[in-house]
Length: 251
Image (cartoon, rainbow, N blue to C red; front, side, top):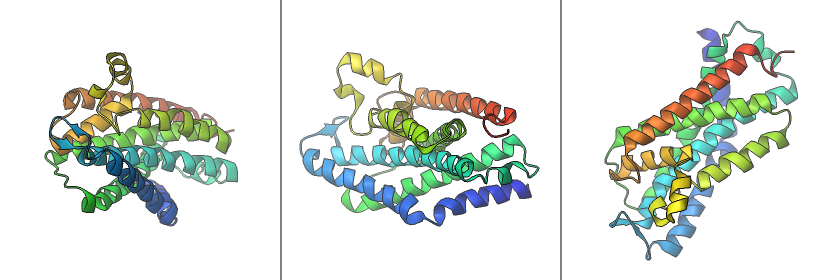
């Protein structure tokens, strides 16, 4: 376990030593979203019949921050190690591919949760935000971090340069998060687009996380939990298979 603990510590320190960029900057971005959208829409929109728009928006921003930063942490770490050539120092120690996977994903979850908590705390002066089902919120935050942390490992292994990694972020992660109900309830969409939203696993993670705050959601939290869990298992399986075969990691 010493090797695993060392790798995990290394991954956590990697983002913590530049926390102004990896933690503070994402929190600021989310707060700017909050200030702009709440100023424009809070007086005009309520959700679920009684919830102010700003209150509805904050859990979405928190979960969006968790997902995006979990992906960014694992993917950026791997691509940096590959490009700088120090990946060999992670492969030489007697670490199993399972320990390698868990260390990278756990660090990704840690960064995602840290940023998410920061966004939540920064939003508290602007909005009254009850947490009616905290265990549901925590479960979806952790599970979302695992899903995107795993996806980040896949992207980091597959990519050979930063612009390939940026394609994952710009054309997959960003669109799926922005179109997942962060800024709106899908019941405000036309029926066709409501159906399309149900093919987006990010929607279920954000909707389930929002249920933890309000006890209300667009779909059953059990369905959301099932979709998130299946997504996590599939991505974990793909990631572990790539690591076990040494895909693009071993010569």
